[in-house]
Image (cartoon, rainbow, N blue to C red; front, side, top):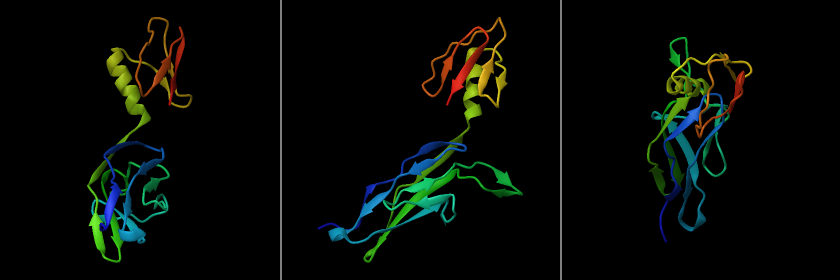
Length: 155
């Protein structure tokens, strides 16, 4: 009969700003004893309405945030740890780093790799092209459909 142990520990992840995210963590105690899961971000307990612990112990983000407000960091970017407790003790998971990407960083990557500036309509999420420039690419993260006048980004 073993003691308290993790069956799944959190892994490093890149979240997309404004999108949901899940950090996995599950633990089991001896004989099926109840296990309580708590999450830490940069050593501080995670406790807000936007990030909450699911029944299985995983941490769910309703949307990833990456911003500063009035000199305070309101970003989800950081190092997360999962704490599992039962009546016999506490164990701490491996550290998992959450970094953040935005949809527009993909566009910047596209512009850089294409070697020319691609006008972009932020509202419709479409790349507008003049008659001379034609964009063909095959990113796994983005599909760009080409046309003589316009290519649409699919997120």
